[in-house]
Image: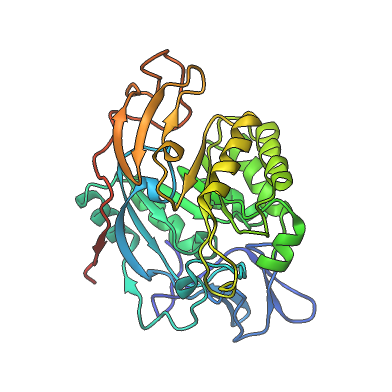
Amino acid sequence: MRNRYPDQTVTETRWWHRREDGRIQCDVCPRACSMHDGQRGLCFVRGAERGEVRLYTYGRSSGFCVDPIEKKPLNHFLPGSAVFSFGTAGCNLACKFCQNWDMSKSREMDTLMDEATPEAIADTARVAGCRSVAFTYNDPIIFMEYAMDVADACRAQRIRTVAVTAGYVCEGPRQEFFRHIDAANVDLKAFTDEFYRKVCGAELTPVLQTLEYLKHETDVWLELTTLLIPGYNDSDQELDAMTTWIVHKLGPDVPIHFSAFHPDWKMREVPATPPETLARARRIALANGMHYAYTGNVHDAAGGSTYCHACGALVIERDWYEIGAYNLTDDGHCGACGAVCAGVFDGPAGDWGRRRMPVRIAA
């Protein structure tokens, strides 16, 4: 049982150490925030108190919602199924283009958040007919103790868990956290150190290490998302380098989603991403040998559908988040040629569709 404090939203953590100068260093992510008692890290949900690092948002959420799994986005993980989604507040990156800044950058979320125990989340997800629970909206790495407890409660009820994350995490916490997770969509924000430093306040290398770890050392189903920002990370050269690296280091079966940027947070002067940019990125990925590349945040039925990498047949038709024609066997083989479609497939496609259903969990 995790050690909780009189305020039940506060819990102990493991990944930190005391520095010689008296400060406490958080070791969850490469940012390595060093704090005196009473200070918070950049993520704002982990802070130093009485000589240790504590998590201040255990059991709290910015809200609960049932979504289509394709919205995470995951196109090869239980297609058409419903996923119970929630996040907390804060983030360990400082992306100027953040599309969820009202939650990830919040410093006053405590008065707004819902409360739920891990067991209550698992129970609610089961009753709602969800096959998985997603930690999303902000990065679960920063509330990993709560997320892991939720994942354990879900596994007890045969419900899977999904992490939507930037993958900016140190080796030890990475291994501990992902032991509890069944699928992940990792936000590969760009493929240059300059972008990560100047736009995200982070580094590229730890993210690439997370990707290689997930692919080669775990059974976690992995998909990628890259938000393409005009003039920042959308050049042919960068897209070519990125997708070539993915094929060589992760293999051709890892799907990638190219999503459209819209002006937000501290990048309101940058224009929205044209649909053609997403289509161009998809063409480059496929030309470089990736088997599955998708366009996102735009209406593009062809770019959102799944095709057999062996024979080219349409195997999963999508219109936004709605599943149309479905030509996969229950265990994920192409109905036309029998080739395996990479992913997690367990029976026929679900019929949740585009619905978004907010949920309240009673205290």
